[in-house]
Image 1 (cartoon, rainbow, N blue to C red):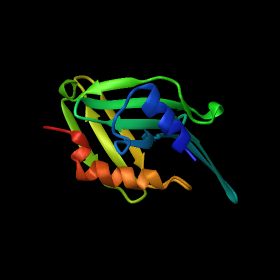
Image 2 (image 1 turned 60 degrees about the horizontal axis):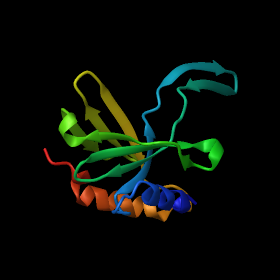
Image 3 (image 1 turned 90 degrees about the vertical axis):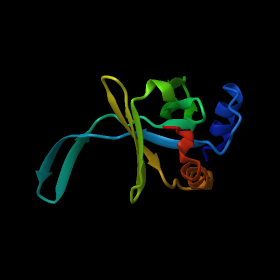
Image 4 (image 1 turned 180 degrees about the vertical axis):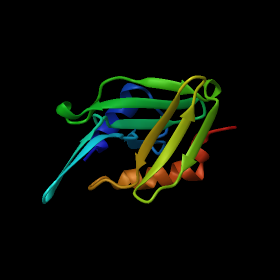
Length: 136
């Protein structure tokens, strides 16, 4: 279902490796929990999906507008040289990348599977095999 949007991002930003893009979101934090009889209400930070593109230069983040059928609404780029540390952690349902900058730590979740989007699993396997193009 997201293949059209991925192709649009690859074309618009002239990204060459279609296997180096995946789908993710920032690690969501829970604000509060309200347990009620027969029901539990929780409040989370706002969910923001991204396409995440890895290459030899660094990582590009493309925030997606859920109201516009997951269209990319810009690009942020982090060069490997600007990162103090990069770590990939395998997870049960989602994998995780941790990026340490001088004064900030970013944690992103990379979705392992998404219904009707088999390319995500294939691309994640490719990125793991290539160590997300990170060169320490």
